Length: 338
Image (cartoon, rainbow, N blue to C red; front, side, top):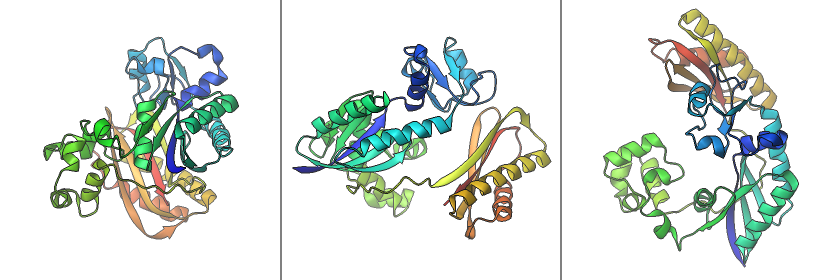
């Protein structure tokens, strides 16, 4: 018997929930986002695999999605419904002899002791399908990093094992962007250093990485390339690290007084979320999407954690001052981090 980390990731989760509610949409391109009106300003929350074949993806403006896939069915986002289904899925996972660590609506790490992780993965897939009607991919690893990456190779609906034994064979030739935790900006900086592949990053000089990215992050990127990761799976309840509110405007904002008023209103809503959480906010961030589609985020650490609405609003307006207000604004958001 060996200890394993499994990563369960539901296939096209939000779209799958909507298709389960509307079976007549099965096999059709489905796009979920905003109020479901592609003529309005909003972005794609998720798209079915059929819609993704047309180049539709999360974060894309609905109008662009409609141009790429004119025959798509557009549906409004319904977070309470997705949360309810997610809870049902996680309850199903807890029926198995595993430790369940929920990391989002549609994914969880499982800690398991078994001599046949593939058989366990198949049982989990069957159980989730039987109880919820949803399919999932399962990644098998000897730590969280490898299990998470393995799921990507198993999607949709498959099983893949990624461990120390096959790490080099599977990952060495892949771009550094394939690593969990390395985004587009970091990828660009690594490529500028001549580190384009996972193998190159694994062989890199940690001192040089520390000089470029800092004493903690630099060496950590190399650690990712070596496939090292956390093996501890904890059955702690999923707790959001932040609460945010945002609004997309159908007409661009240019008046600073109106922009301030919108941020203040969002801050009040976030402050209510903070009060409901009964956890004081430690940081406040503001998100601004300038026309045509340039998104920037600024933040600040509060002098001390607080749930005071007036303090959260004051901080949000102070962060708003950090932006150069030279372009019309199409979206504003405020986030409180715990």
